[in-house]
View (tube, rainbow, N blue to C red):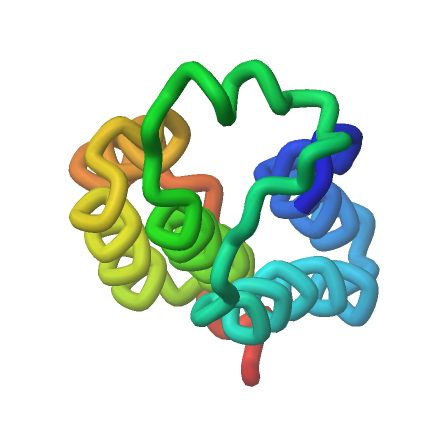
Length: 129
């Protein structure tokens, strides 16, 4: 993902908005887009692009960007499954993301919502795979 991409949870909320409007097909497209991106890029090896806008961050912090990418992919798959109404899968992917990158803030936010059972998931039965 690039620095100017919209936040992943925006795509989740776009899908949830489509559901509210009765446009299930468009909603599923958003949710599956999140899952598909996560699955396709889960094993990518992240490399520093030296003309990247965030290069100073790369030079200051010594991080494993491949693991950071993996955590983000698990997070995307969690969001997609939240939208599809599969809270068990969503919780499992959130746990994987947190295990890989414990400081993933949005992952922690959604884990807290999972524990409180207030996830923004679609209505069960509406989103059949």
